[in-house]
Length: 330
Image 1 (cartoon, rainbow, N blue to C red):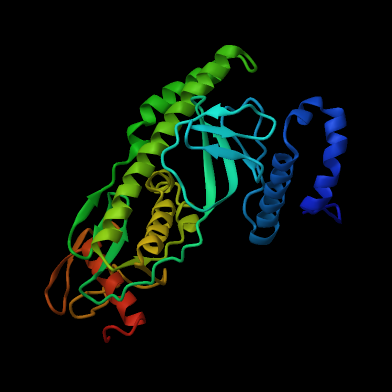
Image 2 (cartoon, rainbow, N blue to C red):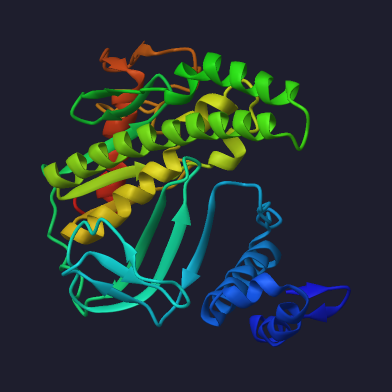
């Protein structure tokens, strides 16, 4: 991190913790490992900002109900009486979903907008990821993501876009108006903001559930999944489509596909974002330069094949990916 020519590492910030504790008594109630864990997160956020030109780090207000903190070490999990012991805190009763095997690493305690508390624990189990299974043309599926249909497969299957944000817009606008009408700093405004946050949380949970189930199914049914690399940041600059693109959350879906593929020894193939997947006839290779975004179906002038735009794109995505792997010819 740097400011006005000075550079600060997390180690420099750690040295300031005793001084901050002296002037802020409540910091003394927090275990030092968690405070040092937060300085590491601050360093990571500013490093991404300066190196990758991502957004400036946002510091959460203490009034924000959504909060989290790391516990790097010195905590224990008791599966016999379902409790978790954190530093400087009495044992807490918890619902432990499953017993883990391995060496516990960093734990993260988080609070949702509903006031529910969760703890996620990173465990080093010493197990290697499964070896990737061999794939062929018949065990690979191409996927074209979109707005009307969330995903169209090279098999011809269309997965409807649930559009959770769009379906909740009316209610969101009502709640946003209620927030704006309340006096800043009042308890009523805080309640209104909480109701709004709960709805946003519901939308996020619905979207994650949909994407988790779809990504699991695709990885389970295929040895390889082929996708087009999308420039989402560039696409959302189109103000007419920005909200619909954000609602689809394609990047989140691809992330889920990739880590599930690693879990099960499957492969995710990516093709370049400038490949003409939609305009190229998947049968004869004719390039339809006149095709526009509004054209959902078209007939190839050369081979007379009638194409559904997105199914044709999915087939081409699969073909391009397999050509890159030298599994099929041009």
